[in-house]
Image (cartoon, rainbow, N blue to C red; front, side, top):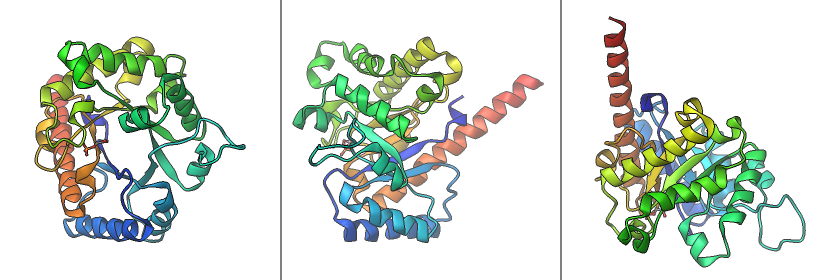
Length: 279
Ligand code: PGA
């Protein structure tokens, strides 16, 4: 079934690159992929620049008709008003953002971003017609206690509770164990698959199997071109939210191509088993 979900490789640039560096990067990435005859229907690509670079990337992507989606790293839950420093979902949607990262562990740690806040941001993002990438994942302490799956699933449960079916299927969840982010050591393929399957199971129990099979679950935490194929061994892992490895166009383009390769293989296997079952 995963064969029917197009994987997403999303670069979370965090606080890197001004608008000039950002446009240079996107041009280089696009050139590298075209040079490799990349088939853009195999995998979706998204870049999440800092707010200051979104407009420049948008203009470039449009003028060169690139198959690269744009996302934001945060959003306000409110639509307008006296909220110094905040950016609304409507503003991001007008910049053609398709995705918004919500509840990243760095925002939960350095900003007053709690579960209630995350719910409101998810709702604001969906209402503006964009897709939230909800970040969840345990710290080292929960893993030590062996409660990592309950913890991650619990973080998702609180947020998706009262969504409509349509809203639920537009959700993406990034399982990002906090201990693996920016450390150079990813989780294992089994960890990634177990968490992705548990999160999909929650969607199935809440909204039914049809919706659950549409939700994309990403893995994040030291994912790169060397471990991408390994981390996608499990059928429920639908791509990556990438930090460090998304800052190097060569590394990032390599990773995107490998994810596309996995997607093609999954599609072939699904077709083969379908043909087998009809004989
Ligand atoms: P990393 O970051 O790939 O550098 O570990 C991932 C993230 O924070 O989304």
